[in-house]
Image (cartoon, rainbow, N blue to C red; front, side, top):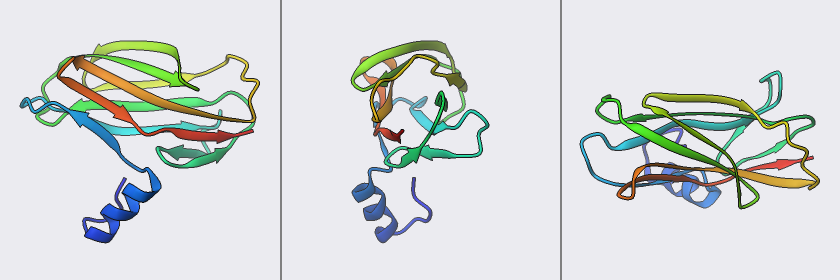
Length: 132
């Protein structure tokens, strides 16, 4: 995410992994409104490219919409450590608040999203890293 519209902000976002990739050029082009991992109480959170120190079950929160505001059907795969943890389906604007209760034996993990309308309309986020 960029704090401002400038070349410096762009390069900082790129270097720090605070971005997502979009494929597709239809009028209903997908956009990631937000993607973050939060503590159970929501007081601590981190977005893509960030690290979060967390005890307990992570809350995965995201919202996907389209640039023109029209609803399209999406399929969002939540990926943890390279494995699909959960698949969510719905119409944009599509909002998810999911708590991952599965036990995770690693001290450092990551989550990312893979969201598709079709093969040609697609979002892939950079990961959010969790330290235990």
